[in-house]
Image 1 (spheres, rainbow, N blue to C red):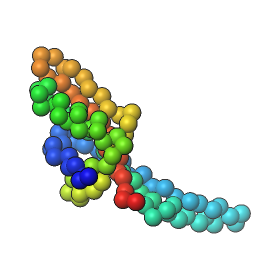
Image 2 (image 1 turned 60 degrees about the horizontal axis):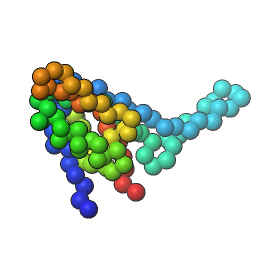
Image 3 (image 1 turned 30 degrees about the horizontal axis):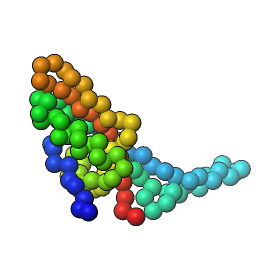
Length: 113
């Protein structure tokens, strides 16, 4: 099955987190050895919020609900295409009023096996 692409443009100014997984060994003389943990020691996450008419937000909500266990392609704000999954406990939908709603979620970087 083909990998879907998240095509909606980000709104606002998204703020990404870059988390490093490292292994350390501290020695008695104060020397500390530090190395990256695994072949992908850095992971990124991007919390995003979209607001607009309900008819425009519902396709976004449906897309992110499909991608909590399945990766999708997304171009991060700095222009690099990668594989991403939606953090399962991050999806929120808020009716703002009238026909307007807000959808928020967090993309977490994923990797090919």
